[in-house]
Image (cartoon, rainbow, N blue to C red):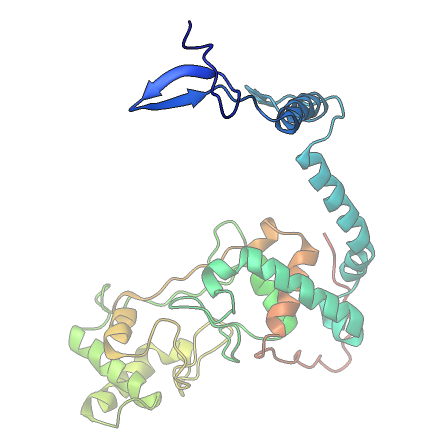
Length: 307
């Protein structure tokens, strides 16, 4: 006890009584400004706990007397943004997609809205720049399986590709020529040689000449006698050098042998019609969009029903 009350001469501060290797500790009091700051922060923390959500509970947190929450703030901001966009969304809903080019401001709004929706729903497969990947089409070029006008793109997005339960889904089915025994392995190779010839990857040879006959008897019904494909059945053009899975011999052999059955969601059951309209407008604007086909003579405009 005597040691605890011993005073350090130079500072006038009492010793605590702890000593280690000749070093002793002084009982120096905290500065008043520091103590006041500490007390202020404690009071501030107590007030915040009372006013705002703070204490973790089993199914959330204490609500606080002000009733404020980050979720509530987000809902307010989203509601305000919804009100801000409402006139544009109503205008888009009332306008047939074919008529958007006549309204530059509305067209620009649709494209920007589609750009945002694309980042959320489409980049996982088509990539952030819409350049696609193996098995997922590049949406920047002018190579289309079903058609590249804005109305056709809207139809494809709405009903998807090979989607069960959607009667209007895009549907094509290439036979598995090798797996199902329709063609012998050597015939598959001849067809591959012919496809590589018409796509300017190989020079004419005996295998390609045999493949031309096999192609005419088995493949031309969908891909056409000139191998340029058919949008009616979603058969790709085999002469343009643009490949969804690849144009090398091994990949083409796999394609002819086992066929390909890529799918795309039917977004009509997941997204509202206006969002789909904006997506179609954005995809059409990427660089490969085509003009609408001419209407038959004497045809009357058909109103586009909105859900």
